Length: 424
Image 1 (spheres, rainbow, N blue to C red):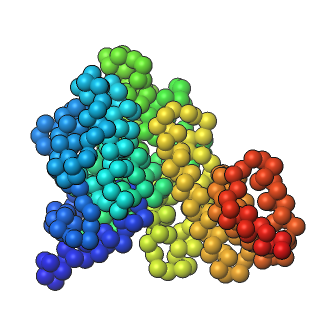
Image 2 (image 1 turned 90 degrees about the vertical axis):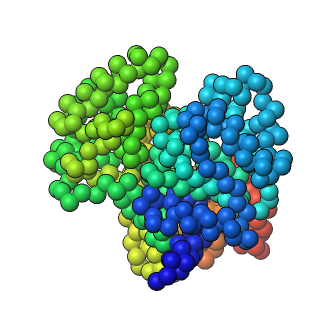
Image 3 (image 1 turned 90 degrees about the horizontal axis):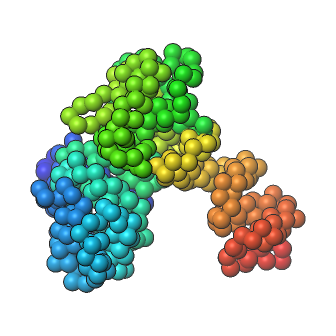
């Protein structure tokens, strides 16, 4: 196959994915990722804003200054918010992180009403820039509805891809292939020695026995934090766990916690390599969150109805409760919301398949689980009322509607219209 045909296949795969996600990572092993970027930039049908990170983008202040300048050259009004920040904020953005993030996002939101791509090229220049990495990760969740971020990097960008994929906020492309599982390339041909379960209270099983010798909750949570990304830095860990301590104190507590983790598992599970920490997958590790996100990717991409059904059903079974239930650290709450969004998608998608098969009772049970997770989902309430109607249970449809009103749930005009139609 000719080169332009291979690039075109990558482009078509990209276009099939980009509408339904927020962040697209072009896998470092992609042969045509830079050519795909060029294809997107030169496509008259795409609204593209491009920024290539430079050698100075190792601090947030330099990154903000440079990308704002480049974006203003591509869109004259860009920066009218970020450039109005007080000088002390602009010079020390890390100390005013949320303000700078929200202001930058406001500039993005005003650029265009069209669907647009923000391409971050040569992203690996920020690998050791903790504040830049954090800014991009947070920006992904604040993109306007019509915005998409594309990351081109020679290394696997240090974003929490497993949870982002669970929420359908991220997708990883390797040329014309959508990565459906093993997002961090961690699968090893070894027997599984460790089984890790984060969807629920969070526990670890080694050689068939639940680990209960953690000496506190921090070593266990450190392990889950390390599983969250392909690589983590010590500074990243300290910021997540001990932001109130100065760096020397935080580092000391980190090393104590790491020793307790290794003692609890009876192996050195965290490997320090070239400035990063990573989980030693050569030991054989199963992680339910990885499987969950892989199943959701499979369900979104397969054309086989039975395969999709089985993937969704397995995903629902895997979700035993909120991610690391019982803990409320900021990073845990963020991941919890992502997996919860994936769980709601699995429930509603599986209910739709049951409905298509004429199994309304099974669909109704799943949708009732879904609204118990999120009472604000107006669309799910309508589906429940429609199923009650299809089952000849109009009184229960009416009861469900009245319960929404009694509990103060905002009821849309569409839901009110459905109620009148059912009762009419």
